Length: 110
Length: 119
Image (cartoon, rainbow over all chains, first blue to last red; front, side, top):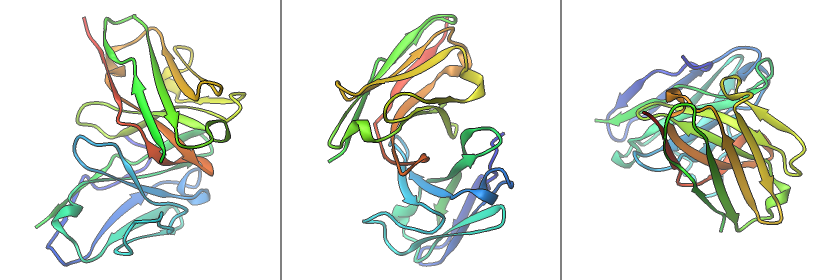
């Protein structure tokens, strides 16, 4: 089981908004920045969000992130079929002295 | 353009060894910490190890400490992972990742190299 907890799957209709949650503790999310990655089957992960809510160049503003306490969320608005992928949260854990990832969430666009 | 090209994966028996390489280009390699992140078949991402830019400091996940060694050759812009005493649970696709500003943030990834530990 992963240090960070994500729902295994989420789904929503095309055009709607979906939220992916990531729950941790004070040793990781509570005191460190959170990043989010998007991974399509058979491909490498891609950075989507960093520093809780910043988007790298080229990432549409449909993708947004936030953090509150020991939890973080990734919101995807205006869902498109091309958004179907696995999404992972990640951060540093100060107690483990390790990088930790969530177990991943599979997004299905209905 | 940043390019990361992993190699060295393959089939190895339990207890065996492998050395993975990651050839980097398109950025000033020595200025960035680099990591290995693995993904077992059908599973999620798992960080394995990180080495700082100068190569002076390393970090490992507990399950590989004493068995794996991460290193780098900045003159060759190449990252390595020496894996000894391999176990079945080490079977995974191994990605190298370029960090961005902090060692838990990756802005570029390679395509991965597959390591299979099986008799």
